[in-house]
Amino acid sequence: MTNLTRRDFIKTAALSFLAANTVGLFPNGKVFAANDCPVKTRYSTFNGFVDENGVKAWLGIPYAQPPVGKLRWQAPQPLKPSDKTFEAKEFGPTPMQALMKLEKPLEDDDYTPQNEDCLTLNIFTRGNGKNKPVMVWIYGGAFVGGYANEELYSGPNFVSAQDVVIVLLNYRLNVFGFLNLASVDSSFEDSGYLGTKDQVAAVKWVKENISAFGGDPDNITVFGESAGSISTMLLTVIPAAKGLFNKVIPQSGHLDFYSEPEISAQVAEKFMAFVGAKKVGDLMKKSAVELQQLYEKYLYTGKDSNLAEFAPTCDGKFLPKDPFKALKDGGARGIKFLTGTTADEWRAFLLGDENFFGIYRKNPGKISPVLRRYKAKTPEEIYKSWLNGRPDTDDNYADFTNQLDWRVGQELSSEYQSKFADVYFYLFSEPSPIEMLGSCHALDLPYTFNVSSDLFTPNQNLVKAIQTTWAAFAATGNPDNETIPHWEKYSAGNRQTMELNSKGCVLHKDLNTQNLNALRYVYEDA
Image (cartoon, rainbow, N blue to C red; front, top):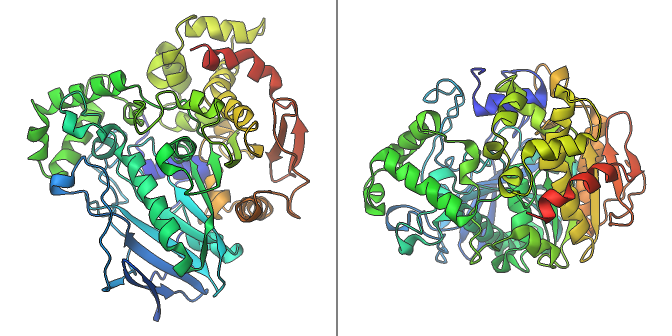
């Protein structure tokens, strides 16, 4: 295993090198500026600032009561109105999480203060315009890590180029946000998806207050990558989120990445046994730091623990029991989609172990929820059928896993939704400078937010194409703009796919139909 932090892991995958000086949130290196920028809402007057590039920023805004004390493992509670002034010039704390050193879990070179009191958001825009399109970003990190002010998610860079309002939100993670304690104590029945409830609460806050910051509350797009993409997809089929937004841009992550109640209950029982807790009250007595440290030890030394254990629990109450079926049945009716994947998603994980695909093949159900649910054939039988006479090579197996877990699921989601709203599908195919990674998971992030380092600068033509296209879709529901060819809608009968690449963006028809038809049964017959 490579000795990388989570941040380094993502940066290496996306930027191709371990760069010391990533240019992200505030390109000039100055987070604060002298020009105050007060905005009055019913919850406070938020005093932000204007940086020297004209970007307005309001940082660390609370959108719910702190989930601490008796509110630990409870749904986010609304704030009370206030006429006080809040100095919105510093980022809020990072949600509690493991420090994510793959070999040395208690070390990290990118320490950001963590706190259980983490339900905050950051807002960026420029100029004095009103009723701008609003884009709400949900970060990835396998539902166990991540935070809104990671360097790769540069709101200032995006709004410097596009006339929108960007909101980046924090939500609870891992044992704080997705530990299903319902079977242990019924008073914690929604603890398996509290992070998702946080996301809904944040978008509600945005809809209620964003007009004061220059945004249009009736023109909100939610977008995210990886776990953020999965979250974005899930929000479209959650009844409690209806009417809060009308467009989504899920980047690499679909509705089949979730936990069943019986699976997540086993994880909770396993975690409690690991830390020696007999009841939830034993966990409530522990400080947030104690829980974080116990979670770290569990993650790295616990038997059979894995990062996929803390996906949202779909119990049929807050979240549909089968979100994929909910989408197919019209659960996201009226919500427009712009969605897609990178060409080689799983190859990012070769950074952690160059034998990743060998590990996957040895125990695919531990990594792939899709293969865990499908019982009619073994994973090897599915693979051999997909090969259809082609040789069993390492590259073919990698292609199979990428198709099965990522692209086919994303395309099926698009096919289902195309019956109920406009859908636009893309394939990001820009290669990483690290040859073995191909166009891997998270490689689209520096292009989405135009984030560079001393050793790597994303192709600016592709950055412009992606940012302009995302902003056009957020503004109008149609991605067409001068940087790309005309983009036709995706449907079962007309599978139009826009390939995003620095050599030129090209619209293809039936780019992946053969793989989709060969593997869709694994989703539909599970």
